[in-house]
Length: 101
Image (cartoon, rainbow, N blue to C red):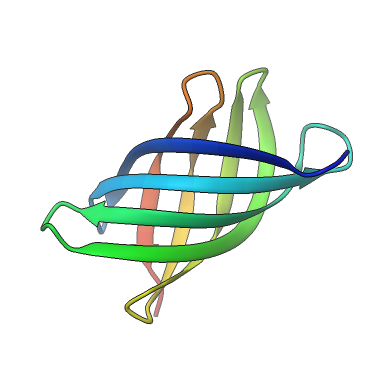
């Protein structure tokens, strides 16, 4: 299956909280599970704005939802672990973002 691209916005919760606006590119051989790359802008609840690029894996949750887990390199030189759910129908992401040591 060729690469697919989606744009979405959503919220992040966990050690950090805020809003994320992103473009993800997916590659999957079976149409359900695969890998992704990500480019995003995150607006944290304290008002800080950071950019990020990431990569990870996807797994099929339902006909319109994918689980994602991965790592993002952030513009402030930190690294974040990401775990969440993408709702394809609503173009949204809900998940958690954790600072990696």
